[in-house]
Amino acid sequence: MARAQPDPYRELFERSADAILIIEDERFVDCNQATVEMLRYPNKEALLRTHPSELSPPTQPDGRRSFDKANEMMAIALERGSHRFEWDHMRFDGEVFPVEVLLTAVPRGDKQVLHVVWRDITDRKRLEEQLRHAQKMEVIGQLAGGVAHDFNNLLVAIMGNGELLQKKLTDRPELAEYVEDMIKAGRRGATLVRQLLLFSRPQSASMEIIDLGPVLREVHRMLERLIGEDIQLVVEPCTEPLPIRGTRGHMEQVVVNLVTNARDAMPRGGTVTVSLRRVAITEDSIGAIDQLAFGPYALLAVTDTGEGMSETVLAHAIDPFFTTKEVGRGTGLGLSTVYGIAKQSGGGLAIDSALGQGTTVKVYLPLRDDEPLSRDAPRAERHARGGSERVLVAEDDAIVAGVVVRVLEAQGYTVELASDGADALQRILERPGGFDLLLSDVVMPRMSGPELVRELRGRGSPLRVLLMSGYTGDGLMQASELGEVDLLEKPFSGSELVLRVRDALDKRG
Ligand SMILES: Nc1ncnc2c1ncn2[C@@H]1O[C@H](COP(=O)(O)OP(=O)(O)OP(=O)(O)O)[C@@H](O)[C@H]1O
Ligand SMILES: [Mg+2]
Image (cartoon, rainbow, N blue to C red; front, side):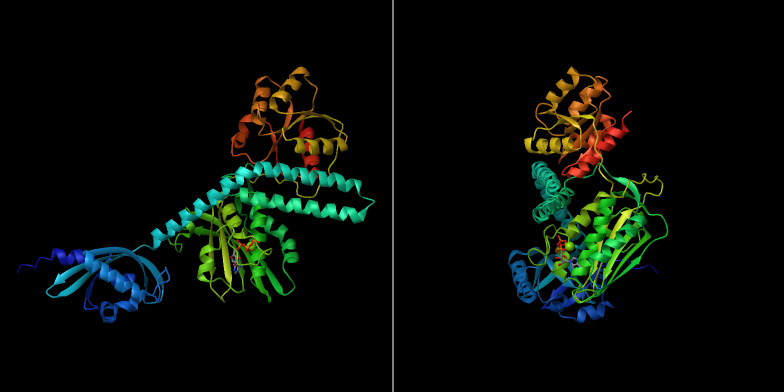
């Protein structure tokens, strides 16, 4: 007996990955298997028994009632023959998800039959959202980059002059206090600029391979001071090495930002748990977190038992400047900074939170198991030592130049000032061996810092160089081609300057 040929149209319907339904008189007549799976119904019969309106949440993303809007969409489809639009549907378990709907009106006698196709666009929406976020970060980065150079110069002047003044006020504590506040404000300004610049600098020159374990150990004590007495801090360290690419300062900042948020979410106390462990991201990892490549990761998770986030807050939490805190309590940069830092290290971020359920923020950083750890930078506060060497300062910004010269002279150095790179080059060529160190700005008229260095190296000058970089979207990051050059990131304090000048001089020879 010949087997019946399968009906190709029936197959087209049944095997489609898009959900296909037929509606007649506001009732489902038929649907394919994809519909049942998309809506996670136990079976087709149960689905067909429901009223179409039961498959939507009460309202749509634009705030309109689903019922009213559905009628309008159907009316449009009937009038035009078909209509395509985005819609929020609701699965059997209550989860709301976005679909693209194609409604086709088919006249049948005096009745209208509707052919409905749904395509689940959850992934597309997520990608769109990520793109939107990335673009926003980029704009902020550009903005920050635009003002950072000037802003950092101002901060150098404020902090540097403040420190000079402070030294002169040791016998006037009542005045020294004002200066102290001024310097503190300058430092906060510096932190803010650094945070914003994270979005514009794809990679900072100072990235190293570091072990996360010790970073968490060192920041532990600071965390205890940060949280109040009502909050219990639990730290779950990791005994395995967790080598990642980043900077210690950034990683500390990540922990501090997350624990600060946890603290703020628990005004009546609770527990914050900071844990660190090694995980593998594989195909099976739920939702392939934040589009991360498969492989081994360090997972830093900060969990609190606080108030949690609503869906709206969760959707915007990592947006720069998004805050629910009152003016003066939050800038809204905490999570976006964490996100920026994670991205720089090649990692990503995932947040689990619901109102009343507490929050877990997970930071994934790819492990660099095969790369050697960078040598430990000296961490302890070192005392800045002066000297009697001759330093040539190339800086076009008069205020910055003024502070730098004053700070160095106060330490015993003989300082000469050049107004730009070309001026500096001339002085060096006129007096070979006349200077022990060139302390140069990066962005200057006529000849930039890197150009100056290249010129010097081209002429075989071994002069030691310390570059002061403000924001430089330009060539600084290719500094490696300049050979042995040290970098001092603006804005710096007077004591940092003295420290780094001494380091640079001591490396000589
Ligand atoms: N652990 C948390 N629990 C509940 N809500 C949180 C948590 N972390 C962040 N949020 C929410 O996300 C918002 C953004 O956080 P983010 O750290 O970026 O900024 P902020 O804390 O408001 O300000 P800033 O960190 O700049 O001082 C917060 O205002 C808060 O509404
Ligand atoms: Mg915060």
